Amino acid sequence: MSEDVLPTVVVLESDLFWAARIEAACRAAGGRVVCVADCAALMDAAARRPALILIDLAVAAGCLEVVRHLRAMPALRETPIIAFGSHVDTAALQAARQAGCDHAWARSRLAAGLPGLLASVLQPAAGCVEPPPALLLQGIAEFNAGEYWTCHETLEALWRQEPRPVRDLYRGILQIGVGFLHLRRGNRAGALKVLRRGLARLQGLSATCQGVDVAGLRQAAQAIADHVAGLSPDDLAVFDLAALPTVRLAPTPHRSIPPA
Image (cartoon, rainbow, N blue to C red; front, side, top):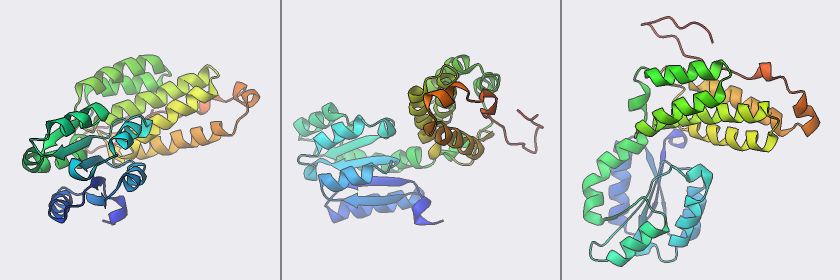
């Protein structure tokens, strides 16, 4: 597999021992590391929406303000940001948490938990290969019937129950549905904003996830977003709502799925 398509872990680190250790663990988990040495490089690398950001507090002087900025970016809202440092430097660990890091761990804890941490963020396919849960099927039926707000409520409940990265599937579908609801109400700006959020959620998923044709939905929703971006308010008033795509399930050898 090309390095370019592997999920990425951005690491702010200058210690060659730790950089090599993290890189080896990341490769074993199926990802790649982008190692940076200063705040500007951290900002640039993080803007590419990595799966995980790790920050060594020993080299992070001045970078906690960058963390605050990254945490405020919608595209990075769900990206885990974990700082690590000396277990005796409790002030630095606390400052990292206050800046927006999800966790601030001692180096020993990071070392012990690194394989499990990387597996959880780099291998979302573990959830994708499972069959669709009942609430997902219910939400898809509501989406395809144009009941976008009801779909939102159904999949929001499912999203809150699921801690693994596969939860992006549920959030992505419901946000695309809310985008379509805004279109129905003539709210062009709101539609584009939420559609783009939903597309970002689906970006890191495999082409098929829990039976859903994710690649097809991404392509169809992106085409709608691109089309709406070029419309004037008057054009939007006559937008063909019948052109809105549905969520399709990929047929499996175990069952026959009727077309949406």
